[in-house]
Image 1 (cartoon, rainbow, N blue to C red):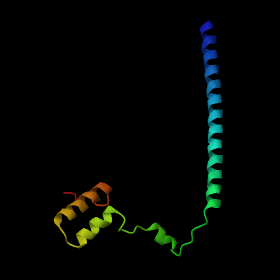
Image 2 (cartoon, one colour):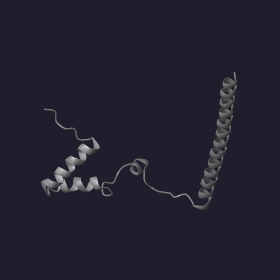
Image 3 (cartoon, rainbow, N blue to C red):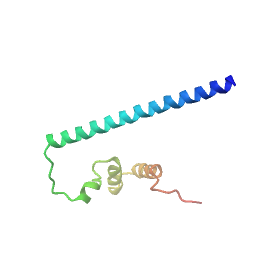
Length: 103
């Protein structure tokens, strides 16, 4: 009987602690959300919106000049060396856009 009461008491205590931890977490999340929203509003007020004449599809495409893959493709197109072609193949296997040939 005593063991049952101790187990029941421990279980209820644990549930009560978990309940208070969850309430505290909700308060922290709410505070962080409000803080981020306020910082976003302040950011919008402090900086004027940037107007660009570029289209949306131009903003999402990669230039090729800004990444290492573009350099590799240009070196292969220029016919510089087989080593560059090998590097390009290794990159293709690594990024899974080049699939090995099945025997």
